[in-house]
Image 1 (cartoon, rainbow, N blue to C red):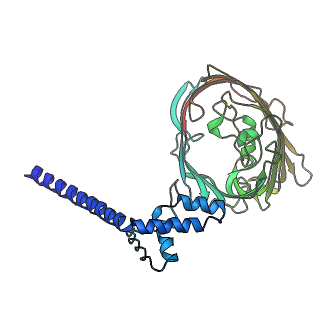
Image 2: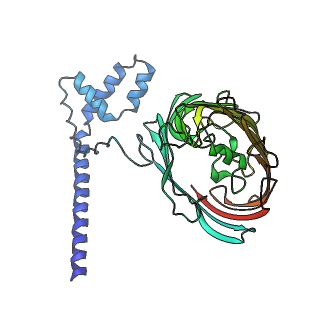
Image 3: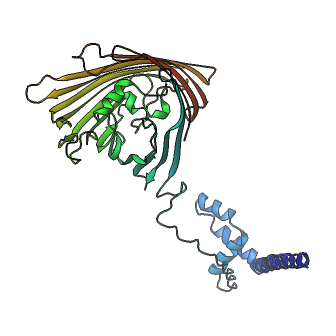
Length: 441
């Protein structure tokens, strides 16, 4: 019974469509019969076309291409005895398309674009000193980026990391949140939360590193708020066809806040910071910032030399000491085909106020990688850090050997490195094995 009813409904719908189709066909045939000219009308049209022979060739071509029905209409206008031309059939009413909403949160919108993203890094670590083994989610990031009205770019990123928080539950924090407006092709203004323009290693995303972790000197700079995400205003650009790069801004120092708990690190001053780079071979992408890679997975030829500096006045630590902080550094990057090389030196001076001696800390690293079989990469790095050059036997010396397997470049890759942690500042010699799987898009 149900099948018979469904068949009946389908046949009824088809009959409606068929009747509408044949009705339209009949109307069209009737209209064509009405418009068809008689023999006398054709003779009148020929006489009119002969009289108009002195007109320009372009208009003549247009008339010759027009259908006969049009000539008949013109002839009727010229000859009052000719019957009036038939009125055109009224056009079928067409439904108006709905008005486009002012805001559409989709990639197809012309006003607002939205592209989501996720980064997941799962890590295994083995420490030879404690003989401990551990699996954990090192980083989990939720990202969103896009444009507003083709003029303003935005980016937001939430993190739920457990790196450095062994035995603790992850907390959700804001890692990036900024908007950017391009004043000219070579000047963009950015405001919000993002990376300070200091240290190439710090400005390289943790998803595009040659080895699993960043360098020791970067971590030292981060502990003083010089190489980390902070809030501020930045002007940046890449003029001279992308061969020169500048980024200058004014920032808060997240480690020395103007507002905080009593007795905490404190500073009421803003921190100016700037970075300048020259790209000798291939230019950098126009409009980019903090988009470096430690490995370009066998693509391109690059040679870049950069320098950066930052300064914080009148900072105070938990011990009550007051000081100025001055940091500077330089870096080099070179890659050609499967080979890549990167080196960096940074120095941070803690200039105590009141005649006390200053504290100087510095560090450097050099690393290289070689890609073979298009997917496998060998990596090596040596790095040193001296947290206080005035104290002897305080230097750390770490050497790492690693390998990467790129399943889909940096979006899907497997990393492994083995680090020999040595140096007079290392109380116990230890080796650390790390394996990390990453998915990032």
